[in-house]
Length: 135
Image 1 (cartoon, rainbow, N blue to C red):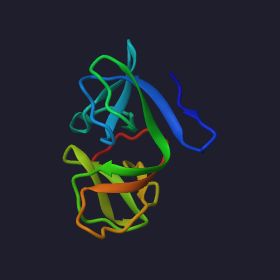
Image 2: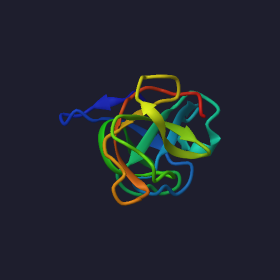
Image 3: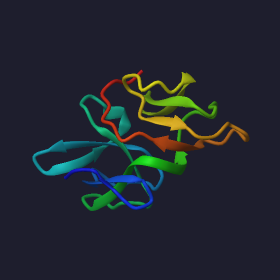
């Protein structure tokens, strides 16, 4: 299945859930003989999209994952982020870099807010590109 864009400018892709998935939590989406499937970010070893489900997805069910456009309240491991920083997968979770987004390998989003309350959720501008590297 290919990504598709909706009228609101957000890009989505459908995938089969590898387990019970939590809303607003990032997962890697890869292709295999069954089509698009999810896997945990800690398993990043192949090219894939980072996708965010708006709601929980049951194991084995097909879910809709946002991979592009503005996405609010995404679960992240870091509580240190600033608007404009690039976001990468690090240590099995999402983390903002200490530098502005440049489209470098591994960056899949731009931080769209400053850390104001030490929260572990973040607003992102997702870039619908497949990534490989983690830092």
